[in-house]
Amino acid sequence: SQQGEEDPQALSIQEGENATMNCSYKTSINNLQWYRQNSGRGLVHLILIRSNEREKHSGRLRVTLDTSKKSSSLLITASRAADTASYFCATDARNAGNMLTFGGGTRLMVKP
Amino acid sequence: DTEVTQTPKHLVMGMTNKKSLKCEQHMGHRAMYWYKQKAKKPPELMFVYSYEKLSINESVPSRFSPECPNSSLLNLHLHALQPEDSALYLCASSPPGGTVNSPLHFGNGTRLTVT
Image (spheres, rainbow over the protein chains, first blue to last red):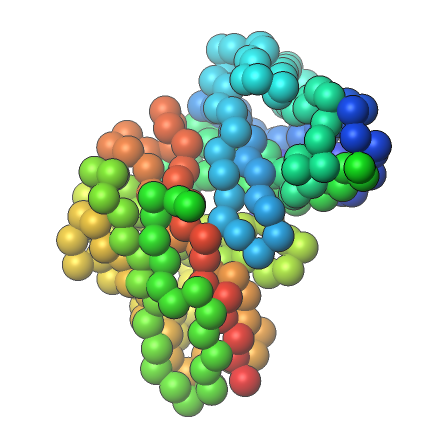
């Protein structure tokens, strides 16, 4: 079963706009990670946020984590056509023993 | 390009064939993973090797047989597969300590079609 569920499943925006994706999960976690996947390719790690952290930034990416609500969000600012991809959250659950479980993903399309 | 190399990139096999998928990394990672991904779905964990020992098997059918010959190599042996096994098979690795502290490094996958 999926630990994380993502919302929305698909998002279409214009270049220059911001994109926000949300992830909810069910159990206690060590960390939550965000990945990007271009069509037919492998996943690329974007950001890892630990359970005792609330916000992290990396370039145009901002991730928040609310452990009380068991939710996270990924914000991409000033989007570019090259940001078009699928974005997945993944959780490392406590006591799960080196398992990373992925959410359903958000398919982002950025139109030039 | 990724630091995890998977071969072949594409594989078409019949239901009676035996084939193997290969994965290699030279980052000194001691945990290696196989994931299966169907179209428009998230990756699903199949196996985890930690220090060359199988530590997690997610109830995968025996027609999939993993092997970790050394700390740099991971194989997935395939036998008597079904058409529903067609998917993208992703290999990943992580440093010692696993995903508690570190992200996964993925290869670009093998696109498997079972006819």
